Length: 229
Image (cartoon, rainbow, N blue to C red; front, top):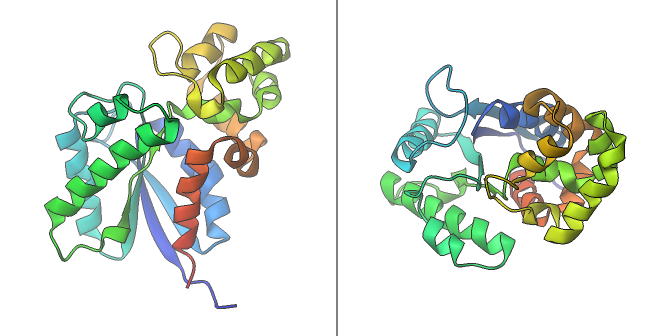
């Protein structure tokens, strides 16, 4: 069995919630595999989150890849409320499978960045990831833990019903009224994305999230491979 190598990954994320999740949940797990991931919010300092038009995000991605040629770059952006100018979005909307929607955008983003950086760019350094449909979907991986974390254990049954209705946590839709975070807030109005979202994710644990969210798990698999020989 060969020794693991150390690899560095910069995760460009949408907002403070995703930044906290990467630092508090992903970083320690990936470090075991020799992959050291840090999170950076896109946009200027003080940016409060929310996805910007693609040209602005593209600029941040390219700057990250050019700044340090030994670092890998990944993303964690919600499918929910993506601006209409994002590559692959129109194709994604025509897909039925959850994974196919995300992969249509990821594939188009990857192609655009690689084209911008030219033939000499190592395409494996960039791994785009689109969260279906929103970060909070991951928290539906264990509805009992989620209900207890938001101090509303009585909503557990309703959270279970939502997952059953949508087929899987990643299938919870992206409408302004029924996106994952909107459903949680409707049942538990005191829900705070950054604090309680992170606490819930820590309590649920990465193995449970991966077992219920196949597209998310596929992303983690790719990141883990950066630590292999």
